Length: 210
Image (cartoon, rainbow, N blue to C red; front, side, top):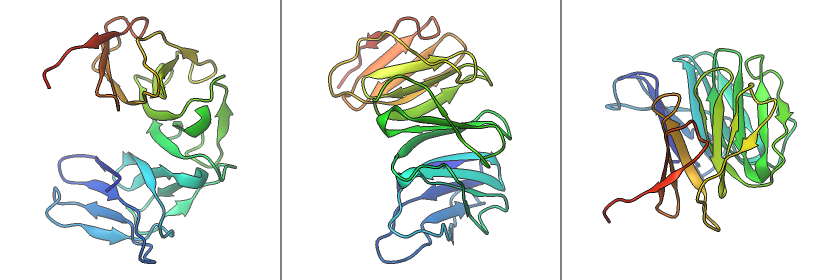
């Protein structure tokens, strides 16, 4: 399983690539995981890396080859959205409201929609690093982490600024989350935890057992 996300205590989606020719690589539960129903994504051997649920019936998934798919009927049908991209691996995905969303991935690419995925516009980051995770605090302020970097916007993606942190070479900041507007945690595939208490201006490595 590549990704899993729940809307509430009962309804959730998960996805994994299948290599047996089957297109039923999405799975949904409505009873807290006791039972799962298979759903047809329209693709076989396709890896979707991120899931975002706007509403139990409205769900987006992003993956390889620049693909983003969407359902508006709880997964009965999935539609392929036009990203004008056939190369990028989109690892991060988040919507800040029913219309506006972001996805980010390989080679420092971020794209944004303001019409529920009908069209996507490339955001200028000025970097080529892989992006792995997105965390928006509200409709204007967001963070994206990736290969030895964290970037931040305070104007809905018009400008992205690289933040200073004690990165190490070949490290990917795989996930980032904030518990309030000032305090955030980022974790890397080098087994490191970084913490900020000033909205990303500075980050401090955290020590932990093990």
